Image (cartoon, rainbow, N blue to C red):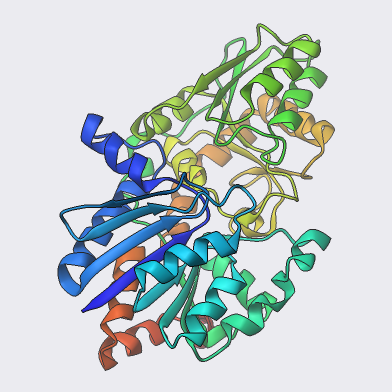
Length: 394
């Protein structure tokens, strides 16, 4: 019998499971899909589990053969406390979905099948280097790590740029059933006030403070209101808004069911993604939802995002951590009808370009199978093979 264990930094899949039982909804895209895929893998191979490092410590065994766990490791993700729970579960197949070198080395040393499947990469800064992230490529290149995967082609490219062997890296994605066909392309609305929307964690690293400061810079130039969906440091950001005289211009809506997000985005005039440079690099799943909504995206210029977007063609990009640059981008979008219509019109092509044929559950299934044809299929999906094919076809 094979025992799969997926370890990721954040999330709480016990809460996802219970919320699904209570209401059938999810608050973060992709989590119910992951649970369904784990159930399918457990039926095929015997057991599957997912451990969230920062979730409160718990173990919940479901009748389906899936075990949901939390390590209570805190936001710093204390690897030692995680390792205790991993060792107790004793997986035959270990999937590490966070840059946790100590855990990857533990799996390799124990002769387990190890995969590293990443949605985000650590920000490139002295702190990341201090934590040993500079050694991550060498660890991933070890023959004991049989699968390395990055979310989307830009995520796979980032791993290769870090030094991971190109023929070892696979670009993967979730299943996205909602498409931009749900909404028509938009024109710049002729109304006041204009409405901006942020969806995601509420803190400084996600750029929420910079967005509020940008809103203050627009006072007297544009009548702009802001809605913020998500959890985090709400009190702190509310206080910042009040201190800048924006009390009546900002609404904090808390969490809302994920299925409501595209319509909320469509009702806004711009979707803002203002991640700072210190936030881990990744392609936010809210990008897909914003493209589905056809509402133009204004985003900080981060490597993995810029790999999919061209400034003033399918998004407006600004320098991360710079409220003045963000205010200028908002002002530009709301002043230019042709620019607004072009970005909205290009959402369909942008969404289509993001799609990958390799899906998370399918990839893990083929990896766990170990069959020659399945490993050959994974090898054929590698970044190195796809880039070589692109050159040949080009």
